[in-house]
Image 1 (cartoon, rainbow, N blue to C red):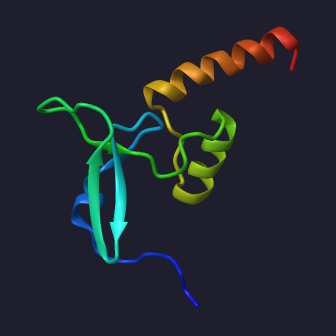
Image 2 (cartoon, rainbow, N blue to C red):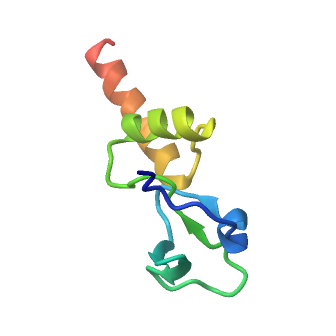
Length: 93
């Protein structure tokens, strides 16, 4: 039994990833809906998270690298990367 959703979704194809998304993708059967999860200004990019954004920084980066072959550099990851490096520097890792 194959339980993944497969299809051609033109809106999803142009949506980029962010660990701080302003939209979520929801499936109703074979129909994909995109809902804003915060106000989106005209001209602002609509972004969703390709993975659960509640994961810790390092887990998110591993999942994105492993599944989608990229390193996320969204505003949240940039901030958490600096914090993560600072903690490691202080602890001598």
